[in-house]
Structure formats: C-alpha cells, structure tokens
Image (cartoon, rainbow, N blue to C red; front, side, top):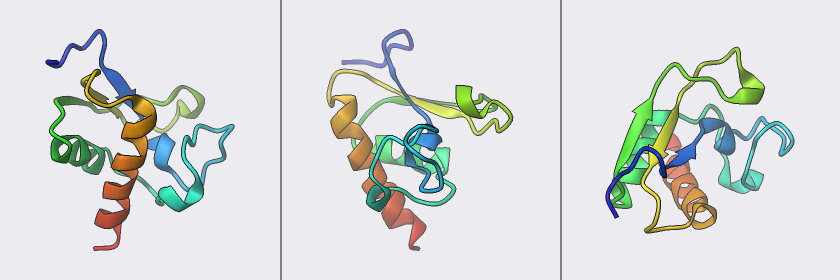
Amino acid sequence: MAYDEDTAITIWPEYFDIERTRAAGRRLPKNLCVKDPDIDIIAKGALMLDLEYEVQENKAYPSNWAAKQGYVKIEKGKIPKTKLLPKIAEILIKNQKK
C-alpha cells in the first residue's frame, strides 16, 4: 500500500517518552521507552521497516500543546499500529545507546 496522507498512522514522540505517564500520552511500557524521543529516529525506524512516511515538524501533541516536537505520519496497511509501536521503540532504544 502506498502512502496516503488521509489514512496514514500518526506517531507522536510522546508515545515513547519514558518520563510521561500513560494518561499523559505514553503508549508503551517503560522498558520500551526512552528519554527525549526524536522524530528523526522515529522516521528512521519507519524507513528501516520499509514503510513510507512523512515528518511534520512544529506540530504539538494535543495534551502537550506548548512543546512543538512534531510527529511522523506512516503509511497504513502493512503493520497494525499496535505492532508498529514496539518495533519503532526497539529502534529508538538501539539508537539512544549509541
């Protein structure tokens, strides 16, 4: 499936932020999260998973409207979001240790 902006999955860096609570937007267990997740590494994760993506900078997560970290839109279809998030989290963890 090709990238379609209307159906693409939105991935916010807040999903992977170890310092956030689940109520504040974290989507994964803390062992799969990092401090200060970077949208460039999230985009790199999409690239490594052979998914088309688009980076949107200067956009704010709704519950964190003051911090405009941006987000990554990833094509929908190949991998469900529930399976995609842990795979991107593993890539974030590997790249943060470097």
